[in-house]
Image 1 (cartoon, helix red, strand yellow):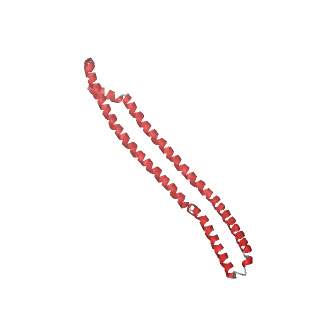
Image 2 (tube, helix red, strand yellow):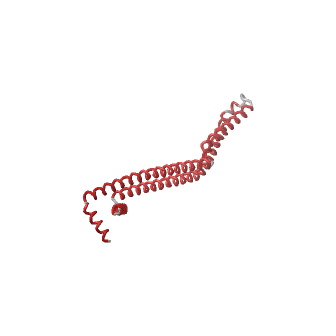
Image 3 (cartoon, rainbow, N blue to C red):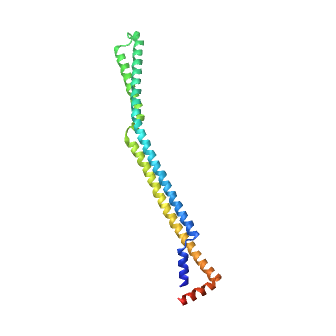
Length: 195
């Protein structure tokens, strides 16, 4: 009966070993919370970046339109200069040649405009940015699930180690009490008999 009381007292009392393991578990939980906060900050940053890019798309479109406008003006001036500089040769070339030159310049102009729009096509649809946000969200979710699984495994291992250490300490303290304090047993028995 007294041995059971001793074990209950030992189990109820908080030892430095218990405090150590409790503090270790708290540190793991705090690390997990900090990682969650960093992941949330990453998601917010990505979403803000995407919003900024979407806002800047309008600026890019305006810049492209201005570029195309200036390019057409430059090509119009270049065409006029070509025609003016070849006026003296007009008698050597038939009229059809001027039409072909104009057609070639028009084709060049259309292709130049199309090529200048190519870099913005990928970014013009919101689908690209939504996929980017989704990929970051999937990455964060994967990290979170991996972290949760890691913490569960570590905590299970810690509990096993802690229980084994506690059992060893209980066995050791019981043996030390029996060897060093045999008089204690006598006092406990006599107090039980009186009660």
